[in-house]
Image 1 (cartoon, rainbow, N blue to C red):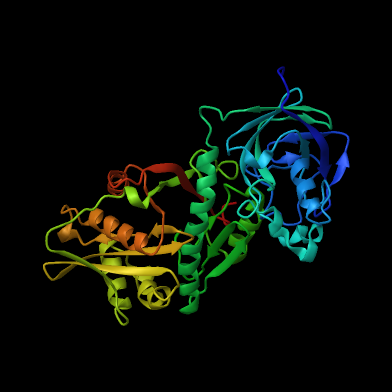
Image 2: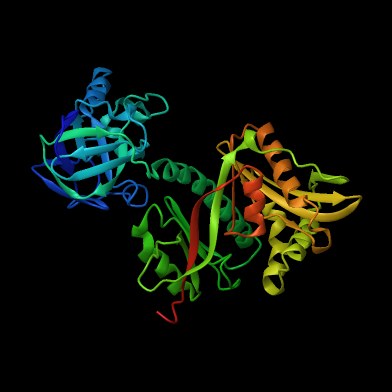
Length: 421
């Protein structure tokens, strides 16, 4: 590749895990990062969207000037660069390095305790992009693999027209809220006495339940970010003796032969762009203490949930309803109960839980009214974004899109049956 250089690679750094990462003369960079490099916390670092960590020597020198004992490689960056203020570049910016390597900036790298030795009093927040936006490390994904060496020129290129970098950065936030909401339900079921085995692995979470069959309590999230956890997830379902459903991108099967089932969309929008949707005679209110079971009865009726799973909802919902940031709503029209909905709020994001309208009340616009009502409630507590999941091309997906919450990503469940493996 030719063209004027904006900067160059000062050092190439790797380690078998942990810090400091030490300089090497060259390294091959593939989809998951530099060959020979590893992480002490592989569920928090690495993966295709955080394959390479970079930091500018200009930022390191500013941190040093504040009296911190930071050095190139001591905070775990793979590439120490010079001549480019990396943290000022937008997510999606491409870095063309050397003869063929192309990286795409994917997100700032949050500081953690692993690197606290590089800071006075262990205050690694000195390189947080939230407090020092010029001095953060940056993560990158690999668009074109290749070799990297100290001295290689770096050309800064704008995001590609088809770049999904901003979408993946938003998904990091949204999926973290989604994961917490699912964890709340799994914990409530476990608290109610059901055998629900819960595993948390950094950006991933999974549940396996010998008591409750089906994907709701036998599901795993996190493979988009950290596919390295796949063996841990498969081991969970083998040990529990249950079939598991691994959530991943529609076109990203987690293991050979995996078949996509139940494709769903992740929908996201801005709270302020959700319109009102009034329905004559409709009243929507939060449930009061003592109404948790009634909410669950309406929920299972609206979704036609039967058998052990229906009984489970009646048992664990009183615990779920007490989760911080979780709100359950009942809709009445002309004094009659017609539907229910839920909402979970974290980090200024409102996660719209499943909502249902009873069969006899469908076709009146109540679903859209439930979306609008939750948006206004979320806005009142400071939320800026709103998200939900819905079956691809279903009625719920159409309602979300019509209410200013479009689909930004598609994922599916991939069944893993230990007995058949």
